Image 1: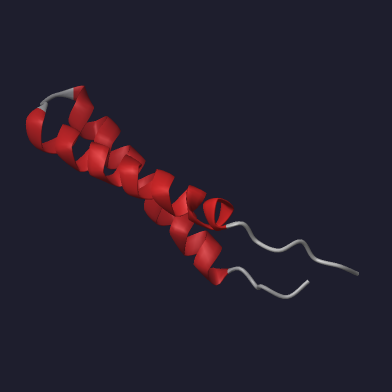
Image 2: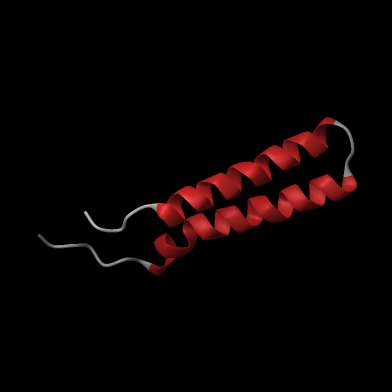
Length: 61
């Protein structure tokens, strides 16, 4: 079974999105008060859960 070669842009898509969401959430948590703090915390928790899940997944198929 042939596997397609990974394209550099496909490799960096998800990490780039996670980095942008993390940066945006941290800035929002520092600048804005109220419900936005909770929203920023929820986004950061979601990113942490996603990264933990992906890190623990088996790479063999």
